[in-house]
Length: 137
View 1 (cartoon, rainbow, N blue to C red):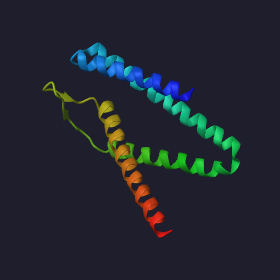
View 2: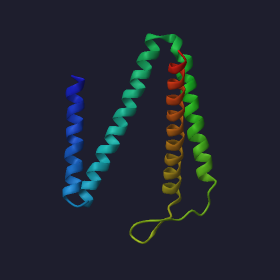
View 3: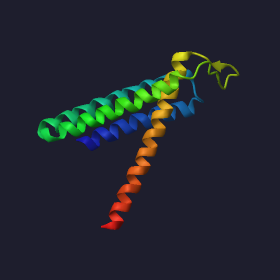
């Protein structure tokens, strides 16, 4: 059942991306792709939270680790937000010859970029740690 659902989600994504490419980046095609991306993101967050809650109820000992993970996420996002808010007057050029100067957009973008850097670094470190640990066994 999950494989069918995954295939359906992938097919919808492929159709929307194909539409955007074939239409040459028409505004309506890009808008539908963004809406679909947001829907997938919300669905993923709901599934992750549901799975975590289900896992905690099945194994109450994991509540401590789950709370630690939540605190870690809040600290990382909070630190990224602090760094992003500390930059005053950023002006980023856009492809239309203008600039992105909305402070809210700039902060959200920078937070997303900083969190992505932290997650990428953590993934790299976790992978290296796991490989070294496997070598030493």
